[in-house]
Image 1 (cartoon, rainbow, N blue to C red):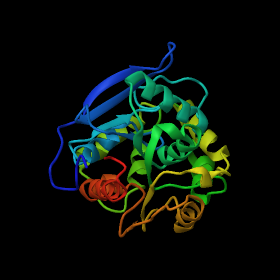
Image 2: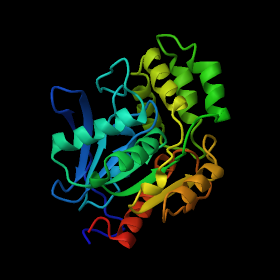
Image 3: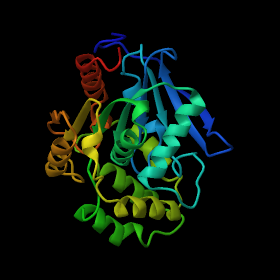
Image 4: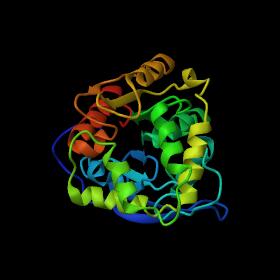
Length: 282
């Protein structure tokens, strides 16, 4: 094994920017750990950026090459008018890996990123060693929290987007406190999205049906879900457990929708332990 769980912290993530092949999109990213180590790719949630994985990356095994990418439309990434379905974002990820000449990776996704990770494992299976799905769901269709958020807030959102609205949105994903400076940074990233991008991304996620072929995912899969998650439910986790062969669900007691923000050390240890048990990062 390259690493086992422990208290050692990697150096702070190093920012970079990738241009996708063929003159494609410009996607910022951050890299931590050993550039020659086995790659782990981190995919953020709706309106976030690579920055939201900073505390987790600093606690992942330093022998890994951890890379968090900002997906199209988010943060400082290029912002096309369309192309926000999970299939599009998964294709971006494949092109990103080609741009950085990365081999098969452990793919870690949160919320929207977990949906993209599922699609990526189905569409580009040779690029995936394993999956870690945080705050995941099979589909957002009919999710009452998402539907209320769309109807009451996002459908009529106008520029400039209100910072108070964004702070309430991000703080609402938490069940336990996070450092104030970290929350400030997350809010600042979300404020980079204009109202039209909020609508485009959420509309695409709301429209996406559950993948009918999750049983084709053939890599080790870990689900990490907080039992105080106010967005996705235990029933969502059970659906994924039934659909993905061999998936495991260690519930995170007292955690909200973003347990890697609330307890980055604990989640890093869970990911490293999963990798050690399944030998996927050997």
